[in-house]
Length: 96
Image (cartoon, rainbow, N blue to C red; front, side, top):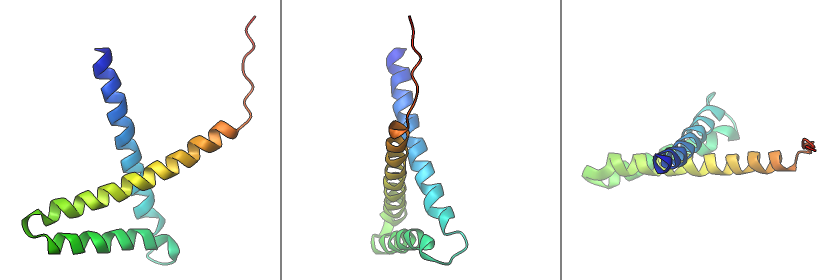
């Protein structure tokens, strides 16, 4: 059971980074204006290009590209958050 729980924790972390990256990418440019919309428009444009150019596998390959971009954004933002949290001064409990 410990191996199952360890696997679930890794898969869950990856899934949360992927979903979080997609939420950030899609919602930052939700109003459709400004440079916040550029990453989503770029990914969406390439996704459709892949889908149209690859025939029967187009939908799967386009989705995979979108998913990969979302995961990269989630990992980058997650790394920044972890770095900032580690730099914060935290008082450690002193146990005697």
